[in-house]
Amino acid sequence: MQSTREIKQRIRSITSIKQITRAMEMVAASRLKRVESRVLASRAYTEKMHMVLSHLVSSVEGTHPWFTEKEQKVPIVTVLLITADKGLCGAYNNNIIQKTLRFIRAQTDKKVKLILIGRKGYLYFSKGEYAHMIEKYVPESVEKIGYSQVQELAVQLIKGYEESEFGELQVFFTKFHTVMQSFATSMRLLPIERDIFESKEQPGGEYIFEPSAAQILNNLFPKFIETRLYQCLLESLTSEYAARRVAMIAATENAGEMIDELVSSYNKARQSAITKELLEVVSGAEALVHR
Amino acid sequence: MAKTFTFEIITPERVVYSEHVQSVSADGTEGSFGVLADHAPLITGLKTGILTVRDSNNKTIRFAIDGGFFEVMANNVVVLTDACVTEGEIDVEKVRAEKVLAEKTLSSGESAEEKQKAQAALRRANTWLGLVNK
Image 1: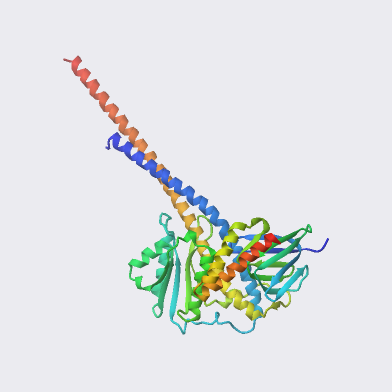
Image 2: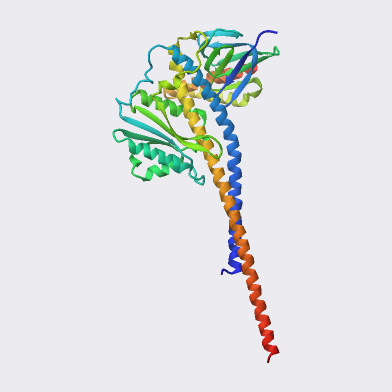
């Protein structure tokens, strides 16, 4: 059995761990709250834009270069992976990295280029056999990336697509559902699938377009890509904080349980030490009496 | 009272405004226009400029918006824009600083891309200031 002193020391160290995980949990909770409102606002924007585009696409004759399947002609896939900068958030990073890996392994006849946002993904891919695929790493912390930076990235990506540097763009991110639930998801950003614009509601009457519908479409599409990319980023960020919060709650709870156990074994150790001492005194006294 | 319709201004960062209003006037890419209730369906681009709203209490509210799109659909009007501020929100000092920076880049900038960006920033700063100075 451990001595009471050792147990006491362990209790102390676990108590301070518990304090730390508890603080991290609260930090994650407050950040989650902030970013959650951002993700909801951005969802509203994305949905509205999607709606406007659906109306627009159904009134435009013919096709747009961004609908056509360029991937057959240019067998290069760009994979954009969004991970966290830090760990301690459960399986969050691992889930999305594994999903990306499966996708990369499945691309036997295509070349893959990687664009990474988030330090964890970079650390993972820069060491393994896929290091040569890394095309770009966005070193800013995910949290600090604002809309204007997403815009810049989107512009670069669109340019790359138009100049046939790649034929397909896939984004791997984590979709936020609830605090307890989020899903590692992939989404094709380019070329755009026409199906997603099949509008359920029929537009009530013909639209007036100023300028022409095709021209508005040309202006709106880059915006749409930007918005979707921004949305992916926010979803990932929210999921990250949610995952971290859940992980830290679990850690705090575990620490609590461990402390309880240690306290009880400390008490036992103390008790048995006292008993032992008593026995010694008593047997010493007895020996004196019977002499 | 005049008939009203729902009007929303949405940016990627937030829903700026969402109310019943009587009329909206804005700078479209093809010229200024106004919208009242029961307007025909319309989709148009917007210039960086000032958008004026008359709400259901006959109050006039002005917004500075940074480009975007305008959709009218069955008495639902939606404005999608990159950025939008109201009169009360503008940080004049900050906008002035941005303006100075944009002007500097414009006169000394290297690439055409940079100049284009500065031009856009300048236009935005001017619009923002225009909202406060009237």
